[in-house]
Length: 550
Image 1 (cartoon, rainbow, N blue to C red):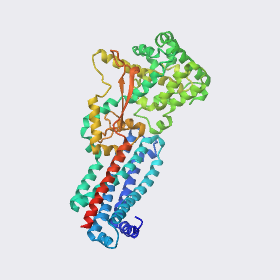
Image 2 (cartoon, rainbow, N blue to C red):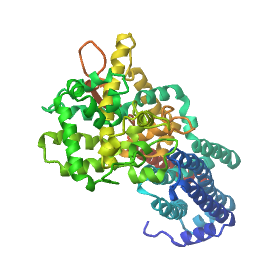
Image 3 (cartoon, rainbow, N blue to C red):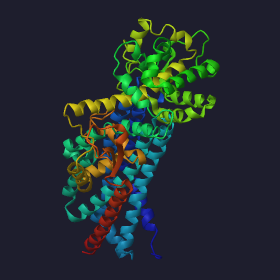
Image 4 (cartoon, helix red, strand yellow):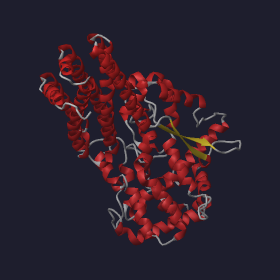
């Protein structure tokens, strides 16, 4: 190695970078890829007056097309460079001249190998710099999109290794025309690896269906567990179970955060239903808001407007993303203020439990089974028309008070809803399976370990670390409102819940326990392919030595 002739690097590199076809291909790749990214980010640059349910879908659709384009054109560039360096030079006799000039076969191979990867990486770096700047320009709210872009760059580096290794060895083993046809077909298949990898469509979809409620169970079981040692609210879930059975429009005003009406008209019934401790808690919050209303948003001594509430504005048919971004943590912020103003230690646990679960209110409210805040003619609108809110709109001095009460009731109501759902189905003899069978899990493990196109699909979609189970479900499950149109890819990680109760009876949320399976580790998968391609390059080099010496 110490006698390596650097002139061959200079000669071959100049020959490569001055190739007009390569310059055109590179220019087309960099410009069109960037245009695709700008188009896919269009909704992210300005979220004003954009409907929330369209923004991510728009990005995903165009970025999917960009991924196909990038894989195909980058593969063409890699194949072209590999052919120029390892086939054309051999055909034209330049390698023979190098050997006759005292340059070893290894030096000839090594110089071309380095030039190939340096050229491809330089192209990728230009691509990375421009598109990373675009990625940084969008809001941190769209973190999944940012991670998706960065993960795809990691995949493109691996793609260079895969395509170049396959092209190199095929050029040595098979006639040029046939080898180029084969590698072109393989590159095309890699670009649509999700469709090719999704051959077990029904099994993968079934797995995602089991996971549909995982995110709800995660939050709810965590919330329930915080009350197991709470001496003040030990019977709170039983109280809401009693309230769940009431259907009259008068008493169910508690579901809408209308505790002012409940305490004025049905205080004793509320005590009998929810218990004294919960009613005292609401009375305490009333007092806290009355004394500190100026510290909350849109306060007014004459009352609040329903149109100013977060609850009222969270309607899919009218919700704009700019409003969502400004208000997504509003409940969390309200609870933070309440906690800072509260001097009652006995309410510390319930307030902190509510704060923990409120951190992503938007995703909760969009799946909340008892949601009454939308559509336009909602139960809240009906209650206002019927006069249930006449005094409430005056007595609450800030919309934050109404939003907080609605959130508190919705959390307890949601848990009650699901427990009641499982109980009623159990009585009907309907077995609601929460846990995927071992047979299904073993099938998915097999797909993950033997299907290379599924693996490439996982690598192209990327690694989201602790959120893998969530992001993969959101994009590939047909039960998700954000799912894409391509075939599903098996998740890197999967979470589900099992019923730990040994007693005969219906499933209860308080008895659920989280289970996590990692079908495959992203880092392991990435470097497995990388090492395999390096081995393939080495095998190709051994063949290269024999071919050159012939």
